[in-house]
Length: 115
Length: 109
Image 1 (cartoon, rainbow over the protein chains, first blue to last red):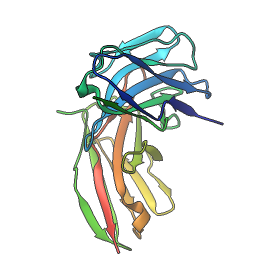
Image 2 (image 1 turned 90 degrees about the vertical axis):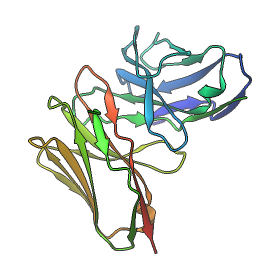
Image 3 (image 1 turned 60 degrees about the vertical axis):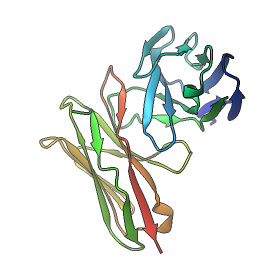
């Protein structure tokens, strides 16, 4: 059981370039999330999705886009990368949100440097 | 008031000590609570869910106090391997999960 899989693990991007961070889960979870974590800081929600075809902004959506065409996949798109987007990006999923039996499952993260 | 608040620490305790963390939350409608641990530059990993009646998993005990709107984590007989950042998380149906900023624990030999 792979759980939540993120690719790539590491990437260096030049200022102004674009890229897509991939996230897929095989647990048939309805909810998926993208977080970023800067060094020494907490997790900040970028976007989330409550099901295929539905996405919503989190706390820090500027500079990012997402799509959810299938239950399994939730890619995060960076357009016109800026140094401020240098961070560790975590994708997570959960079956639902209201039960202590339904925690968040995280991927291993993507470490992105924009230079 | 923040959705979830934690004392950032750091907590430095000797091996074998008992240490407790608290986390307060602002929304009384919250339905689910969790403790995660995060090692440096790694993904958060579920330590335990927190049930209304309190629950225990080995050396770890979690409690929920809905009247005072806080959850707690007690670690007994601390090990060097317990050194990490502990994250308090709450969620409820139809909304996001909210994370505390984390409490740093270092267990000293």
